[in-house]
Image (cartoon, rainbow, N blue to C red):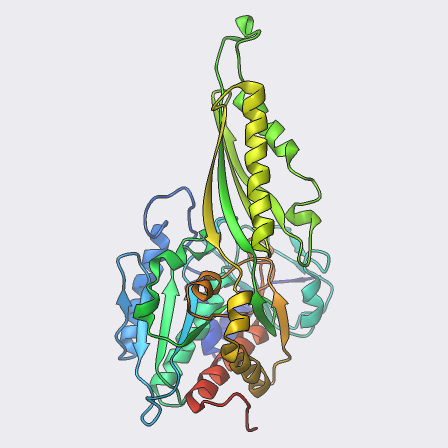
Length: 425
């Protein structure tokens, strides 16, 4: 079993500009915070944004940061390509709140042998946790020390777009009108609220926010978040009979009422789920955070109604307003819109071919900025950035996948500029 090597990573960074961009980015803790009412939800996103503003300005471009922290850079077309279709490329600044993003310590596994990876703290990434590792034998892979996530979702996407901009400004990439966006709070479903479609002035868009090499995401879940609150009554236990109401017990009954076979760990492919991801409380008051997911709108509506029915059951047993729920719409399935506006998918397929990357079209069991952008009128599929096992301490990034993401993105820009669905090569 192999381990990551810090010195090997330092050595590789000397001749891999794209990887160095990525490693520089993971130093910023940009976890979004669903409990925050600030915009963006975490100060780390603003810190990374300030860093990127400086880097983009050094390229003689003119980035703009909105009051919400979104960074937008409009890049004029290469001379002679001003009338090409307008393309918007997006990645997001935040990382998932599921695991720490503070003090990330990347290391390099050199030439993965296929027998698993032991992280510094003893955690192991094996083929049971990550079956995709079997596709990366012989490759260099970036890992963490096992105490944090890596941040490839979506700092790998940011690195790809920063590297692209560097080569756009030196005229080594022919391009039409380009808009590059670094959004905020994507992981908690708020990002597209801060994006004005008209101001992006684009015909279509692509997010660089997928996982395994070769993925083209053409459909996503429909998604809601739900905060369920339980209101108890505290009475001294000596005289509690018939009086005390325990909010924690109400919460336990609510969770027990969710279908056990409709959770993330018990579903796959196109099956939706209910997922409880955070809980706090006491006898007096408890709060439960959960998400609802389904590929069909009707399926999501049924899940919504099921949760409401559970709330009613708790109230029937413990009294009115013992349980309350607040739903938050997060994103929609992009599939219908992309079927109606297939041209960007055709460009993406041609870009994979031009870059020599085998294509796998997927219905992703998650969402991207492209989900809501598509449903708001800007067709926006999602291509891979390369990280595996995102949102947790087992996250890793095969280095060739990062480079493959860049090559596909570069090919896409060139094909859109030329107005060609088919690659001539």
